Amino acid sequence: QASIQDVGCRLGEENSPLPCTDSLAKMGVPGDAGLEFFIFGHPVTMSPSPEIHSVGFSENGSPHRYDRFDAENAEVVVEKLRSASCGGGSVTIPHKETLLPKMDSLSEAARVIGAVNTITKGDDGKLHGDNTDWLGIKNQLEARMAAIGKGQQQQSGLVCLLCGSGGTARAAAFALREMGAARVLIFNRTASRAEALAKEFGFEAISDLGKLTSIDKLDIVVDTLPGSTAFELPDSSVLQRCTPVVFEAAYIPRRTTFVEQALAAGCEVVEGIEMLFEQGCAQCELWTRKPAPRAKIASNLLKNLFTEGSSHPAHGKMQPYDMPPASLIAEAKGIGKRGLLEDKAAVMEEPVRSSRRVG
Image (cartoon, rainbow, N blue to C red):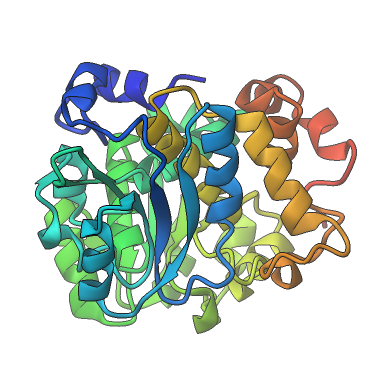
């Protein structure tokens, strides 16, 4: 598993989510003094991000602390970021786009995507905005497609459907473009927003999902609409016929209406909590400048979210508890994507079953 520094340097400045290691050091990322980092958004009461970064900081020898900061007003977030005790944080709804113009500098990926999900404050007090959401999407999609024998489809030209037009959708559009997708259809409840995003990334807007019944190939479906919208395709026959890999960005609730529809159709599903894990590991490497302790982070998520009797505020939204995401199980065992590629069946059957439903 390459570190985010390695990924950034390998991909180059045109799409790196952060400066390479030497440049990052010059940013003056806080190191010696323990600072406060937060998940900034509204609402964030149920966010599992503290379970990711508390482990990342402690395992990587960092004195920093991580907590939730619930604020609907972006100016309140900026005030906290500018405070002497704060070193930065993660950004979620509704601030991914609104905080971008508040940054003193941006990674090229954040600039192109037009949204930030990661903020680092240097010793000079300046705020640097990054985006690791696209890595969370790209890495998880590529690993899952390879694991189920669909990796070759990436070379033949992926056909994708992207639902949504917000900050996460923009990161998904960037990720799909980096994956070399040949065709991406973008749907949004407000058609003009879908059209604008499609034009920006060179994709197509689709206003009527009913037209999917005539499509003969669909490799990936990415849903970035809030779980509370109860979004689903009007006709699930395209899922049954094309069996695309389905990527659900929402994780509260874990089993959204669309996830249930995809599972019933026999599709492989990458869950929102898996994206959260992946992009969180990238953030950990940015803030600590060390490889993320992926196994320890995955174990902590499994313990807090899927263990019966857990007091975590999101625990009640994570049913079924006996079917946690297979990739987290593999990561907790220390085999990660390699394990999914080499022996996916064993990983998924021990000690619990996969979230994929058969039949």
